[in-house]
Amino acid sequence: MSDSTFDLVAARRLLDDVFAPWVRSLGLGVESVDDRGAVLRMPFDEALCREGGVVCGQALMALADTAMVFAVAAASGRYRPMTTVDMTTHLMKPVSAVDVIADARILRLGRTMAFGQALLRPDGIDEPVVTATLAYALLPD
Image (cartoon, rainbow, N blue to C red; front, side, top):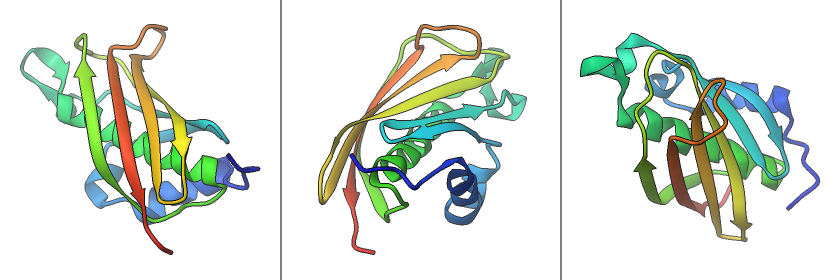
């Protein structure tokens, strides 16, 4: 891992500059970044819910995937173009009417690939309700 120059200010700028409008519409906030990963918050929004007021899996997977981009950038010390090549997600318990916190951590950062894990939990609860393992191809600048 690197001595990170990718700080909270750079992370918040990245959220505005790199991601598609529909990802930005999730209202994600970057809570913290360090050379091991990143923590993001997705505010509760009824527009992200399916029947019964449960936050849909697609929104949770988007949060995990987005959080890992920040984790890779933080571990690299800068944003690097990348693409998701694999994501395995386990939705273990439904989430309703609460913000969701994603804690994304790097497991291995190589020259051309990055591997990580994102744990998602409802705000105020310590136990994860979603786990995702992810792999990214790191593209040339």
